[in-house]
Image (tube, rainbow, N blue to C red; front, side, top):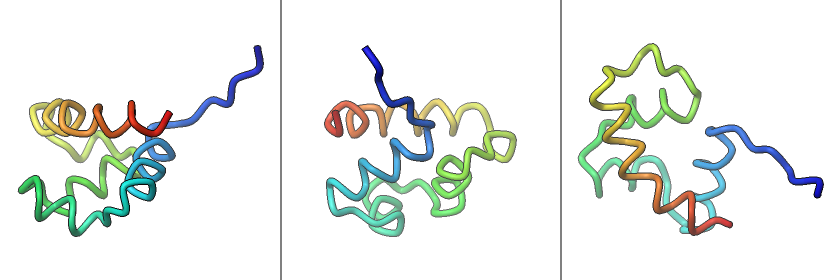
Length: 68
């Protein structure tokens, strides 16, 4: 089976698009800064403290599942 492989950035962007949520709105809803969300989307993980990275992943994982 040939399955398209998506990187983290694509999955996040697709999930936000499907839900009709902007990065700004997600920031307002979650309290996570736009800068941290942007670093996650741009896959600049080195700019995120580890605890923020894991918190973001726990928060966004349900969005990932709903895009498939």
